[in-house]
Image (cartoon, rainbow, N blue to C red):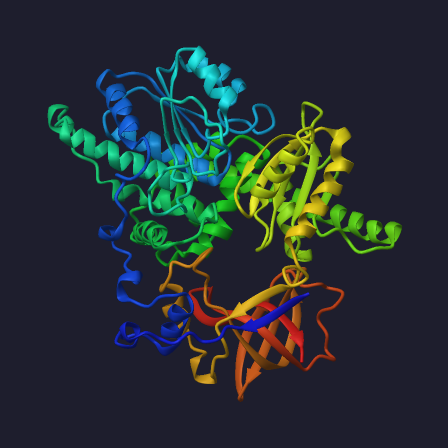
Length: 575
């Protein structure tokens, strides 16, 4: 059950008071801790410098030598959007720096596992690299780096995932989350770390007069920020100010038709207007289509789309990705139905409440869609969820999603320390992680996970809460304010999109698209159009309900060239 909670309006600083802003936006900024004009800076001059990143000099020296000697460089990526954008960024920029021998290798999640594994090193031998550069992975791949070293390949790790005590024996490790790193922001996505490495490398190349000596026009790295924006938003890292700069600058380039052909093609096939693209479009339209390649097939297809040289080539890849995404949706729907049936059976058989830390297992579930299913169940039940299926090595592969109050990667570490026999491997972030266990250990692991979750979470933690920026008055419901808010971000994790709540009268309600509820709402005589996605068709429409308390976002509905105000209802309850 969700609860709508209006924030206590935070006092607006004098700096914000003097800005020419809509009063609603002024309060929204204050609610997010903005007190000065400087905190709203989204120009590139506000980016944090790269110098405090550990090993940045070692990494750039190694890369410079590889360029100078025209060594073969292999980029090893990951099979999600952050990994794909990171790989595409590295390949494109290194080639623009004059590297002639740059290849990329993306692990197949069903065969090679995650990151620079020994299996990937074996595949890397086909490229005969002098240098391997990992992007969005590597920090947990001790055995893989050892295998690479034994094969005679130098390894540079660029990653952002949380680190274990023991680190791989790489030539250089650039990761703001490693112990002793003094880079002020720990929230960079993998693509952000890759971008910073390339910034530092360009500076080194300038010092060496590389571009002059090679007769190469020095690249403007800002031209590649569309990739950085996409990967940052897709990986749901907190949008601190540094990340907001990276994302906003990338969005500006996409809107100005200066993005890569692959992103433009994915926007086109998603029927999204390029000039008005937002972080929501990147999250809900572009990312799922790219991710579908890594979930069902091979993320190399996604990287190829991002590396496409023209719109025709890019559209060919985009169509393939769109087809895969439609298949993914079908698989996702079936798995959700199976999971909900299992939950109902659990409550019936056990005659008890569900575990606080919930584990679900179906050996036939598609490994590539486990993360989506875990997110769906987590959202529905508001508790940490781990979903397992059987992998090719007859082990259980799990995808975990958590709620505020439970750092899922740290919990897995806690379990691993207390029960060394349970976990084969694990890694991840605060809200999302991956793990592998043996089938014989599932029951014990499920029990231990629930026990540890109960130790960390209270009943209040298990109550889903929507934090609203408060009520809007009838005059605030305008297309102009919706447009203002849309472009006032970028919005995302850690800098949430404005959410409001009011009590409305319902004058019309109708199911559309199978599970979406179209609403006509009234407030002080003003009629407003709303849409609520994925409602329970057994409960809605409810014509006995005449009034609702709704939490909503202001949005712009674009249809046949017209633009109209629409309320996207996040949650509503009769009142």
